[in-house]
Length: 300
Image 1 (spheres, rainbow, N blue to C red):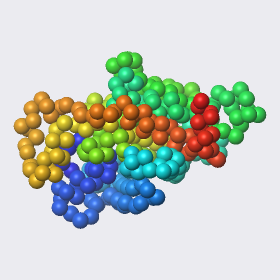
Image 2 (image 1 turned 60 degrees about the vertical axis):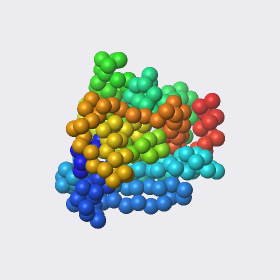
Image 3 (image 1 turned 180 degrees about the horizontal axis):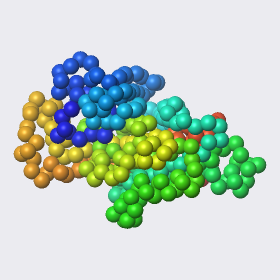
Image 4 (image 1 turned 120 degrees about the horizontal axis):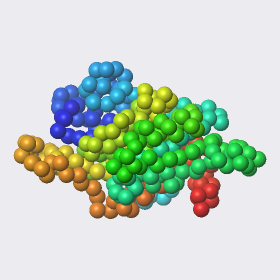
């Protein structure tokens, strides 16, 4: 893979490997497939060996990417259909039995819009753990779900991994869902792609500010990562646009501009919309039998 191009998306890393190798198939230890699910494209990349890890720069595991162009076009029933699709993919990866508790973690900085996907999504999550305990006759059918926004080291003085580890040790969930903003190679995927992975996540890696990982090794329980690309590295963007024009510039010539981060001008609205989608999809995945209308009523 071209290390000058920064991406958190497994499907982009797999495509980059094929471009650099001029190879028709995926690298050894990587399985990739694309399918249409209704109005949405779904790409699944499975990294199955250390060779696959080395080729893509991604930990072994399963990465499912849902492309939301139909939602961006505001097609009829697109929001409900997208929520149902996300819920289906989340259920397939979440190792939860009936009644198992789940901890939802919103990673990122609420005060920086491109980094606010996690906290904003948590605002749309149905938190039920306390209700089951206090009113079991009314909420006993709901899964116990709790949520926390970890903030960032610069404002809390606490690593996200340390905070989540402490909370998980107290509430003892069966699994953690961590929601964060990602970086993409292409501006075409910003705020219109959701990646779900069973590998956990490394907060801050998309903008080169890598923190301690949140995964099974660090927390001792399964961590499902839900990520949305909201930014593209300026050097990566320049290389991508140059490639479309048939050019091959030298990244060393970008100077300090290569370290800039680019985000869409409609980022405020985009983040609100995609965060709501993730929150609602997660609610449908965690609680059996819910509808969009049920979630609306619960959160109102």
